Image (tube, rainbow, N blue to C red; front, side):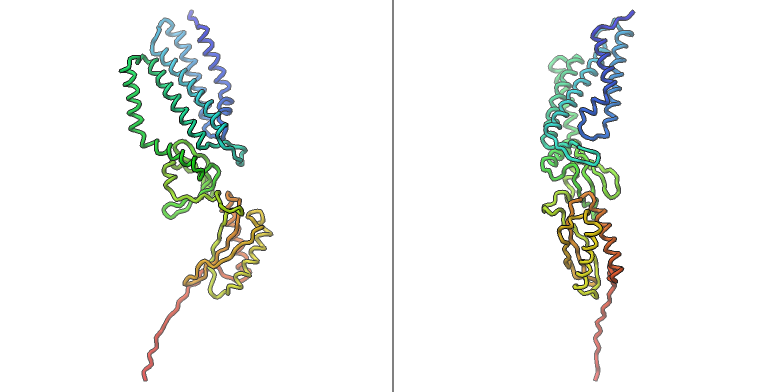
Length: 349
């Protein structure tokens, strides 16, 4: 009859407890909203089941074999699990202490900062080195030559792959340190003549996750690539009035400026009545001539808003109201086609 030692019973009990409370543990150690929580819970539980299975297999099937590969595998798995849990606890306290809280539609969320990210990276590297040395000793590489060979192999692998991960980690730290792109900000990204309006969802170790606010889908971009793009952070407006937004319209030369300004005065009254909460209606709108083109005068209306996440919707609503009022007032917003013919008439006497 195989016997299970007290230590093995203790390990089994601990893993059963961790299996049962894996969801609560992950939720506690992950203070921000994270879609990876479910995967982490499944991973923890799989490891718990594997550890319990290895303990029972070692005690029942191979009780007389000592120092075999099964014992080493079980020990390495236990050490890996412990180090990973220590890293999760360490990350939780660093994010809680040095992270930044901000409000979202789903509640309070804790995002990373330069300090929290830097401390987590430093602590992760330190724990990884200790874990690696522990595994090397457990695998029997006790001599300096053998241990150095293993560490050298790991070093060579890191050196060969550093081009794939080092620029993104450094760029992520630079982004967090500059505070120019923070979670929750609305970015206007221009690339190849196209503009994308995106909400910064997460700045992770190697990439940044964005939410396209026009098409409502998620995007992922490398941190190094994000820094190379031309970005406009609409959430970082310089004026206390808010973001100075503009709408441009082409109006024919046949409509005198006085009539155009009277038209936009009616627009302002209408917007204050219908959409006073969509923009900073306490500040009057500004109407200026942007350009005098060949076919029409380009008029621009400026207004201020702090509802940056609703900027596209605000534009759409304002344009529709202005279009309806222009039709009612008989002012066309279409760009007319004009043809001017200069004819030289030669008179012969």
